Length: 81
Image: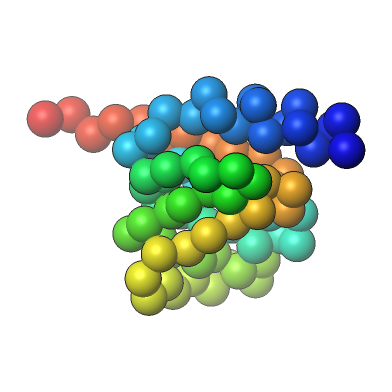
């Protein structure tokens, strides 16, 4: 229980509205914009699901990811404007 709480606190520091790649423990990765972290969930919009075999597909709607399923998160560099 303590580890889950500590992990949830760490992800609260994610910058909302930042484009990220959320790498899951299953080997799947989700690329998108974190719009909210509510309880144990990350809310990701404009998501693309990347499978371990290299295939990817856009996700329909909003993706919810339980923080306990996350292996690590990568932030994407901002595009020059």
